[in-house]
Length: 320
Length: 302
Image 1 (tube, rainbow over the protein chains, first blue to last red):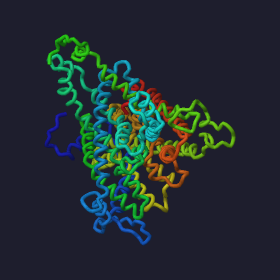
Image 2: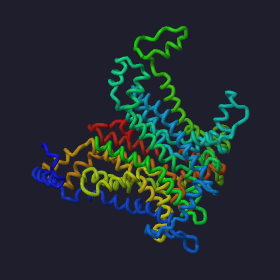
Image 3: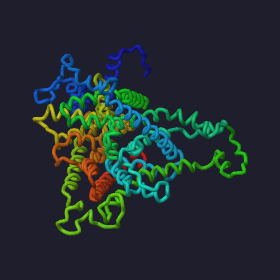
Image 4: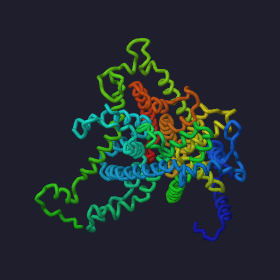
């Protein structure tokens, strides 16, 4: 039925309702919303409220035992603790958090860049040349999802010990003579650990996008005289742009909140990230407010990629 | 720039490199190296649970001593380490309960939000997706504050808090999986049922729900596997030592001097998770027979 765009939303709804009632397909007004109520109650109590509580504690006060008292009214919020945290992050005599924040950004940037390049190559191969082995390859690619993250890190931690497999191989091929202590605060170990931990999350969306690309587009590019490299940069890469951005967001969000990868693979303050500040602060005096303040800065950092991701997924479902 | 065969060169490698129709050997090599890189460390960790020595990093021969105690009274093998076995049981229990509660909540939410087009649906959908993308540490800390400062007298840190935290973090997985399925099902089947006289509730229960079984079983498997491996939420919300899961035990013990018994415990959990996922995959295939997208590939995509 052609509908004039000037028809008001209410009129259209009424017309649709009439049509539905006539065909026998009619739902009570609260029918579909009522399905969402149990989960919505849950999310409100255990996600939305605690989320607000972070601010209530960070900007709250303390009782005489240094226990935090959450303050829920924004007009009573006390910014002292939060300003102290900000002073530690930037520009001041006690800006001792600065290296932690710079380090977190560096590690996340390096690790997600490696994830992207390596992940793209793997996803591209499986999507285009997987052939008969595609199912096997896909199972191997999702395998890490079914293995505990901590077990995967523990495996590397064992292999990187001074008497471990990695030093054994390097000594066998005579690249080194004395074993290297890989797990004693080496940034490269932590960055590679982050890559190892999160790259599966990069590969799957890339695979999905590359698999959807119509092969005849690539053949057309080649038929028209483009080299393989040119076809890749002019056809394949632009068509997978959305997936690249989504993949980067998916791996960076958890990396920003990571504190266990570096603890497992280095356990040294020289590789501490923002997550460690949060984890450590909780056990300190007036630590809850400190932890909450650092969490707020973390939230500010991840807000942009998070909203980008939410917007792009909403677009994707609208187009589907 | 041209698709004519490459010029001949004195070096065969150059000709091979310039050939636009050559097989993608380099990409293939990278892919297999990547797979070896992801899988082999874990396989080595499993092998080391059979090490004859105390080390988890240097091989000293085969033995079962870290699995079953060689002589009674020996308390170092997995079977005589209550800290590890309790952690395995606690984690499995949390994961089962999480799946049993979060999947029904998520499935109902997905059905409702997919069909509800009124005021408020946007906000509800946003809140759900927000809980999906937010770093787990932020959810963990916010619930830690809730249970340690506000609800202390009702639910304090410990198993209850861990369960609630896991459900909150996992609830969005079934929502996403079921919504993807709903997109491919469409509304025709229910509308046909209602046309034939079914009530709205009956059309959902007798028509829509059976069509969603593959997605629901996949959700159970994924939520279980993800919860049993969870670290951040369960460790932020843990109470005393009895609420340790295996991930937490690995984290704590790995910084002391872990013995291969830890490898053995991790192996048990890995095998258990893979069995559950395999069952989920079989049910997924069984129930999606005759529907589109019932193969391993689409399960892997979930």
